[in-house]
Image (cartoon, rainbow, N blue to C red; front, side):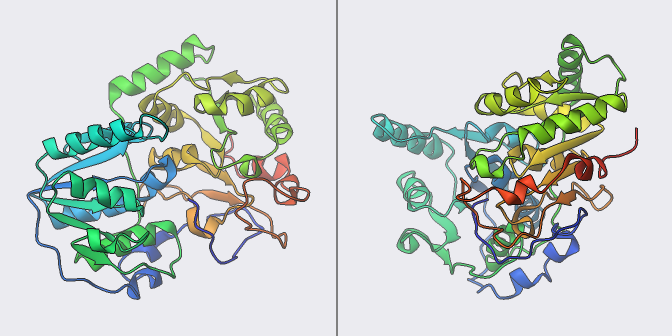
Length: 377
């Protein structure tokens, strides 16, 4: 979710920006990729997942392509602890290896631990979705014979099937699916879906009821945080204004996010009637909360992508980032497309973490405009 793409900002709310059917095999982003020799079907394949939740969700169509291409393979996902629980909700995944991350004094020990965990899996092939040298070095240290990925970050010699970097593409999903295409894995529809079990849904309902949302009471979820930087965050005052509008409609507002999003949620909660659940859910329960909401309003964040994969109706507010690159993917062909709210100011998408001027890409988005995208309750 950090790819600076060509402009293509849209001023109107709507589904434009989502890849739709164009993300399938015929998409322009896939047609120009160089093909390496078709990869042999692996018996045990480990896929190193992206390190960020949003990127991990956008990689799900590729995982479905791989499962369809190699139905008999044991497919295991290796991911950092922050995103690993996502893959327990993904059909076709045969297991998850949790990798430790971070630098500092413990970096060497963590590398040894991760190497050992991958080696224990006795994988015969590794598909690398992170572009880093470290990812390729890790799977080589683990003794995995086949190592596939984009030839980036000076790691080409560490890969047995290096794929030339894809320099032009539309949505991020195309970048991931093009890697599969180069390995002989045809790209299917760009849908990202997760499966939420009934016990997890029940846990989410219990949390809501304990927090004051009665069974059957309509609520809308706000995800006002964003890990990339403050420039991606719609103004707390606007979220609060929207919460007041919903309250007038008889709809509760629930704030969600990680512990790191607590500050953004608290700012909204101080200005409007809202139930703050930031930091009180794990990833599966968060997905269940999002799925049960009447709608989800989110900045361009991991929660936005998770909500769409859970089948929620999503309104995504885009500021400095490019909705043509990272709009949420629909869970299925029948799912409601996301509503994208963005401005056509000259300076976006700038991809900056902090706005050096007046944050006009966000200040020009008013609560009434976002309210108009929400379903009538």
